[in-house]
Length: 621
Image (tube, helix red, strand yellow):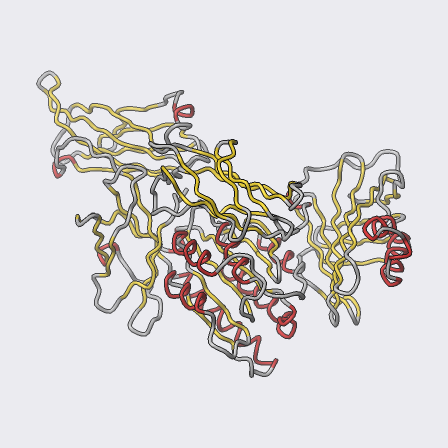
């Protein structure tokens, strides 16, 4: 996007027209808004961009210029404003915010063919918001070639209209028959919600909380549940959909049977194994070894097709010339290069018929007598029972071995103003410390509504840049912010945690506390609340969620001097990071059939160690 660009008036939106369209006619436009729109129209006549490796220079049509690093960090650019720039995936974002008064300019630049697109969003609590797009042609006949652009990055973080709250079920349980489905309605225009299964209307809700009974197939199968929100006049406002009874498998290999065979007088053994493959991956091949000698390779061209129906693949082979002390090893390799294997020593093996098993994964946090997380655990420190039968621990993965999925939900209501600047700095520091290379995070912003500030990403610079979009103002919809955040963990694999920063008791949510509590317990995410300035006891919901999910409640006293607030917030986030770095993933193989509810009992065998949380995980990939 380097070079000089000239506005294409025919294709560009005029900011003055955008204002008058929204308010009816020019005379209704407040004078301050009209003056802002007129100045913006002049500034957008042209633009010149010079991008270096780590900095950007932008000069507008009135010769004003801004020169910033593209690291997403805000810098004071004048006495009353800060600016930040971030460039990635073909998209340049520049955020300018007021330091003494809540206002924001969000500018997004990207290439579309031979043209440069410039999206301007003005947010201000005293005048109407202003959004318009300017289209530029290159000043030269031939513009430089355009690179790929991440279209998702261009979309504004406008509040969603409606989200599905999935029907409740136990871990790994398939659902069938009548179940209760709910919808989180965020757009206040929605008065009616239609519930559909595989595209067919099955029920309707006309009042809050928007929920309905739907009848799923029996026996259970994959079905698409959809909700559609409508205004009072039946105008369509929003849609969401999910797939039910889709079991996401981890990448795992398990030898399930060893059987003695007769092969022309020589000793032989039959080996059966099961390979579970994540839906997002393709299996390349499976190899069978007798000790260090490869004896068979399986490359079934139908595997990819079979994965549409089942994510578990069965492998069976006979191995001849078995000697005492031999072992068999089954190695599976995915198309992306990842490998998993299982081994069994033949002379110690119990020859038996095949047992159908699947891997269960549990996120645990163990603490000592003082409540501090413990980090020196071994598989032998745990005991697992399933339906009264003891199951051996397969593995114990440390936090460094399992990627983290982190959600951060921030209350941006007007009462957060006093801690706002310090909070953004502390959250940036926390993300830099807590997120490793393979970890991912998302950001949610809630006041009297909810916005998806940044979807799941592994880019810490992008997360840091999106914090610049937070604008203080409005009420507090804590229940909606919690429920919306928990929904976005979905069936994503990895360790999990949700951090919620808020200073107020819910006043504006459309969802109920009971709805949030019930769903939170079924999702399996530890919730950490940071209460900034609460002088009264926290809501019952907050106390309940921290206790039942294994999270924590931290309170930053309202009487602290401003100079000490940042120090206290840093201490709190450091404590959360300590918990995250001591999370473990405990695995074992269950004999229960796929689709049956799994409710294992886990206890620590060490007297000085207690389990603060035991939460089911989706399939790690």
